[in-house]
Image 1 (cartoon, helix red, strand yellow):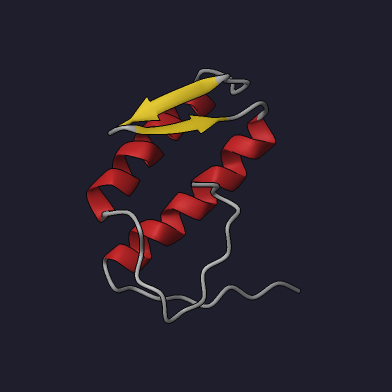
Image 2 (cartoon, rainbow, N blue to C red; image 1 turned 30 degrees about the horizontal axis):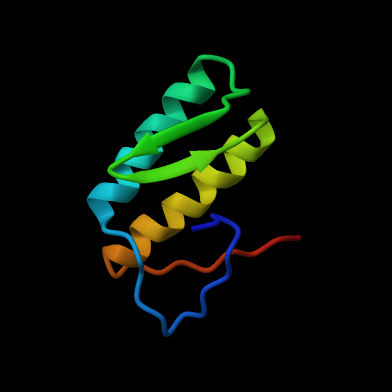
Length: 79
C-alpha cells in the first residue's frame, strides 16, 4: 500500500490502529536515527523510503490511518 494513496471519507481504513501505531513507532525510530532509510517491514507490511521528507509524509499518512481506525476525524486546513 502506498502511503500517498487517497481515501475518501466513506471508506473504512485498511489498517488497524495497532498496526498503524507499530508503523509510526518504526518511522519515529528512523527519524530519530537521522532518516534516509532504505526499507522497513512491520507486521508483514513493507515500507520503502529514501529521505527524511518522505518519512515525515509517511508519518502524517499513518497518523491519519490510525485516527480513521479509531473512528476519529479531523479537518486539515492550510493557509
